[in-house]
Length: 288
Image (cartoon, rainbow, N blue to C red):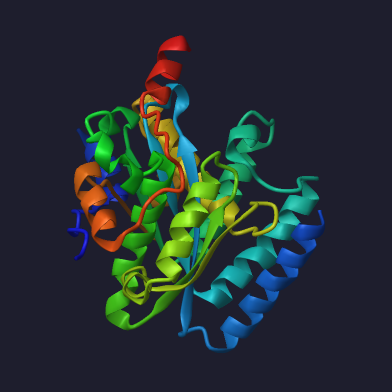
């Protein structure tokens, strides 16, 4: 069974239409740098994917977005972005924290330019939390959190772009969401199933802190800019800078939760949780 290929929309085209009408970090840093060095020698073996999530203000949407990189270009990103952060006295870039800085425009612009020069393709998947309220309670364990759903469907979208090339992907996913443990459970189930490994074109997958895997900061900029655009009901300058010149193609889409639950049910993919409070975000929105 395959998830139906959802129609993906070019974000640059959408914008044009709208306008016209510790210790662990040291170890991980060494591992990532080593992997980039080895992959650079055989860069046609595996792509790298970096994904982050974002929830818009008032919880209007939840999204997961990020970029595919050729490994040697991921290394180039790191070699240029790290010195720039050091020059600003920043340990890492976090859009939510940085957009109020006096030098925010320089930070955002520099990161956008570097991302467009080094990334291969951008992907984002999103849903409104209330879309899950109609999901049959018996099927909720197969979906889990909307964070897990959007992250996994974003990975699936990336996989569909490379499977025809007989390529695979190493997925680096930002580890900051309250449901990151659930996502890791899903990832382990995928790794244990050869058919799913093939469907996700998975060479590896795990969660990491954005200060440990520096390329996650490009995904942070993209996901934050996308969710903020939905909240403000207009395209933010930060996402226009990323996509309007089409230097890197950016694709957006969304999957139907019911069909997604059927896909996971077929393969026995289920959450490690037993309680699913899908109305949580709606209550929080009303209280804000």
